[in-house]
Image (tube, rainbow, N blue to C red):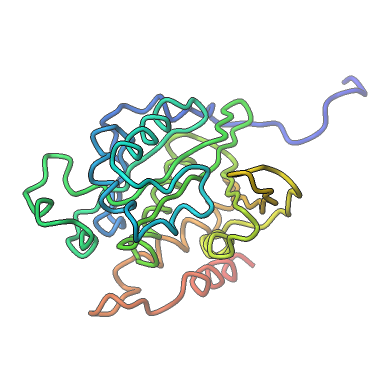
Length: 261
């Protein structure tokens, strides 16, 4: 054997797939989804998304995003089209069939929905997609008020992380955010992502300097404890008759990790 062999573990397993390989009608679902599904973003979702994540009272949702806020449907629709056309993004609409998540809909939205089953209430994207390195990032997350801090919000994250590892065969899923965005940092840690450090003066967003906090979860961590913790937390047995959690996700994951020792 040559003394100049490359170092590091040999990579095995199926090649990673770009999300664009998914059919436009692909639905990301699970028995644990709490009435949530993910569907590839299309321009037909713009009206419902605008109703749920834009308008005067939702301007704060865009503080850390590169675009927005949007004062009218036309400008918002152009943004959706940009996300669809931009090769570095692959967007999903978060659909809900739970009426509790539709409180931001006007009376016209109470009509019976089409066969997509529910309403597009929020959005989440995959980006920095590098199949050759089996690395992908979850980002450009735009959760409307009806989804924020709900069980269904966690279910949406579970669905897209599961998609990355189990359907698309990535080995590293990243989470990056403005280091001033403490709710995003807490969300990453709560879900099981590990903090990797801060990239200083990493980007300029809306004319302002941004330091970026980096997080990741790896395929072996997903297999060993991250998936099990999420599935136990999302399971019916973890909620009382009012839908209140019995144990926090961090507590469940700590118990799962303890079993590994």
